[in-house]
Structure formats: structure tokens, C-alpha cells
Image 1 (tube, rainbow over the protein chains, first blue to last red):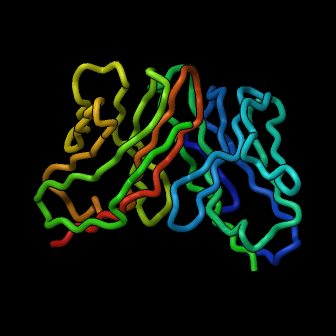
Image 2: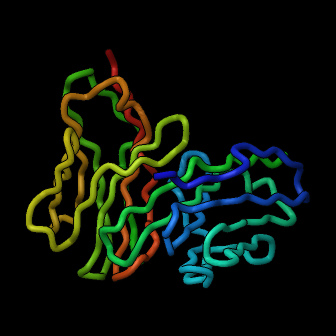
Length: 115
Length: 115
């Protein structure tokens, strides 16, 4: 079974530029998450989708971050304009169904550096 | 609100020895799940072990076991017979309520296994 795919793996941009990340979850996984992991910290949820609907975006900085999951499969996360503090690894994860015990499968992440 | 605390920024262990990584948590929900993930230098998050709040026995998965002390709100990870490949960041995480709620992560512990 193929894992969660993310691209690009690395991105370097200057502040005030825009950037987009792509995630393809495991086939059949209805729930998709985007996490931000700043160096030296644990991942922090940015947004959660159930199929193509947003479940939780309370921690998404909506003035500059946006995300969509058209057709309930692939997802894109965009930052416009980027700030220095957005430098982080952006992790996409997916899970199959309801239940506390259900494992979230993580992608390899996109490492963003904002100069 | 949920909170995960990992008080050990770094740990060293001799190869073939056992090591315990500490994790304490806080939640007001009686239903919750606790997870441990491993993050090697390559960046992917690898699921290790899960413990549910209603589970009567401590979880075990191969060389990993979880020392779950509910009254103390602790969920320490024990790695037996450490191997050089165990050197990585280890994150404790939890989710509460029901359904596919997102994970809340601690800051992590960096484990270094010495030959």
C-alpha cells in the first residue's frame, strides 16, 4: 500500500513570496490533516479535513494560510505572503476512519525555509 | 484543553540497554488515546504504540512497551534492548473525545544510542 505522498520535499523562498504544498493521502482515507512542525517542537495541527469538508481550522493563520481538498482526495496548502516564522516542516497525515485508536499515517513532509 | 509534557530534551543509552522516555498528559475527557511516534533524521513520523484510556493492560509492540499510570497521568515509553537505529526524536501525543480528532504532540525527546 502506497503511503502519504507530499511534494515538494524542500522549498526555499524569500519573505512575502507565496508557496504551495501538495499532499496525496493513502487511498480511501477520509480524514486528512496538515501539521506545522517548527524546529525543536512537536507538530501542531493547522487544519483537518473530513472528505472535502473542513473539520477544524482554528489554528490556521487565515490571513496568510489557505488549504483546500477538492473532491475529497488530494489537498493543497498555500502560504501567501510568507513570513520568516513560517520556516518549518509541513506534515500531511491521513487516517482511515473514526475511533481514538486509529493511527494517523504521516507523509515525509515539506521543509520550508523562508529567507 | 489537552496538554502533553515531555521533560527530557535528550537522553543517552548504551546499546542493548533499556531506556524509559517520560510523558505526562492532561485532559478533562475520560476517553482518550495516547500515542508514541519516532521521527528519524529523515523526518518521517513513524507510529510505535497506542494506549487507550480504558485499556486494562499496558500496551506492548515488540521492543516497545508503554508504562501507563492513569492516576498519575503518565504514559512512559520503554524501549528494551536499544539498537543504534533507535537514535531519533520520540514524540508522545494524545487525542481525546471520539472520532478522528487531531493529535496534540509534546516537544519530543532526542534519544541517542551509544555503541
